[in-house]
Image 1 (cartoon, helix red, strand yellow):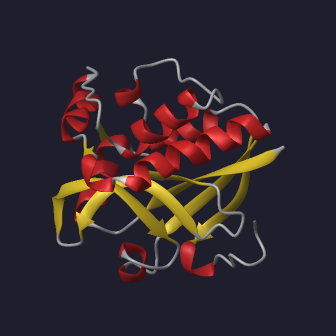
Image 2: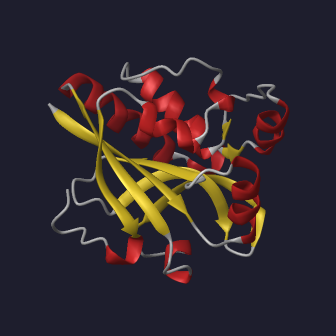
Length: 179
């Protein structure tokens, strides 16, 4: 058995604050990783710090990148134990995305779809939560009971047998001792 990790965050950007006004959720961004040190995660988000409309597949490093500019970022990190075959499938899927990151884009239409409860999906376009839902489904770990593009970060803690490892300011996370 191995573990995969899902990190939920609330960064202080204008976009994340706007999403929070609508969702009223504590966290409005999600990432997935396999790093037992809880430092490296993968997601779909903005690629350019000052321009949120250019987005796609990204690598996120705890307390670096956008998180460095928002040191008060709140986060929750969950662990899900999976069998070796599922773990290897997650790793293979992440490698596929990492091998050609510019092929993937952020699914802006899905944000509108969430507002009107209508799914908008596209093969290479994802929101952060849509990406995680697809990875979990393809790896045979979990399938949400709604279209991928309607999955939200606040759905992640409802995954069966997922365990909260850490909750608090990202700045206070000691990645050497948690994972």
